[in-house]
Image (cartoon, rainbow over all chains, first blue to last red; front, side):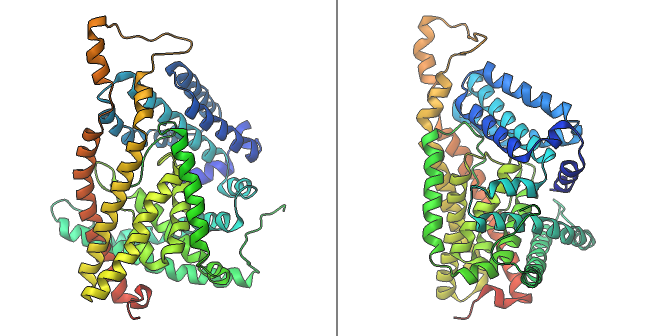
Length: 208
Length: 238
């Protein structure tokens, strides 16, 4: 989750041609990638799609440390090895679908600021849902700040140690409880300041 | 734990499209119970709880990438209507991170909201019966997660014919891709190409049990912490 602020920074500060491309076209591109993932059943087709996405990833000059985000969903794909009875073709198919999906999504996030993505989604989805998305996105950064401050308190109380499982669970739970209470207080202040600025169920973007 | 970390293209099209349609219908029904002014006022709280759930999903407790959902405590704090919207928002954001596919957002929302909504009602029930916070929260969380894991298994099993179709695919496309096999082995191959759901369930349920216990304990400790500092949030009186 710490990568989120770095992804956000990359999306805003990036200078490649993909960064300058319209958010609408990039969202449509992602929809086409999803269509490809859903419809393609041959290894060669999926491999070609993955190769295209990897090429786009590297020519957009996205740092390699972000690449590891695309591999994380593979952890869950391993469960499918047990469903299939270790069928090699099926396993490769699943892995390629996972990699295409995660690479496409990370590519979208690393080259398009979140508010731009939400603005595109706002054209097809209800405004209340897009407002909730935007507020959640904002709240993640607020809670990350609170979490960073809480981490110091957590470490002073022993943090997370396998040798002391009960104390560790207690520490984590207190940290989450603290996060939730601070978050609720912050949300009440956020609502008051939004109302003062004329908020009425919908967030308006610059240029509307 | 019950979050379906399924990639796109694995579940059959009819299943995930149905997931979206049912999620929209359920959302539309639940929102009839929320006043518009109330919804606007509680949107920042919804955003904050959804953000807490997203953060919970990114904090791994054990090396096998188990993470807390915080759906039950969010359901208790937000109520059944708002927790549905919160889980939808969480799944969209997690989908955008590649933490689960984008096409399974509808199904994930249904499965996760079962946790939140059941957690809310079970907590109210156990609180009214037991009048003790710790067992009420723990039992509500454990049972809610148990039910949502069962529904996750149900969703995965509905896609069985599709997995068998994918397993039976010979390599089609630009390059032919065959395993060498004799005709006599065909019978064995057919048997092996069957999807083994029992093995999947045998792995998911024990792992799930560990997860339900852990999340039950963590949610109980969080609720006790909140009860110490802000008892009004849990709305235990009345």
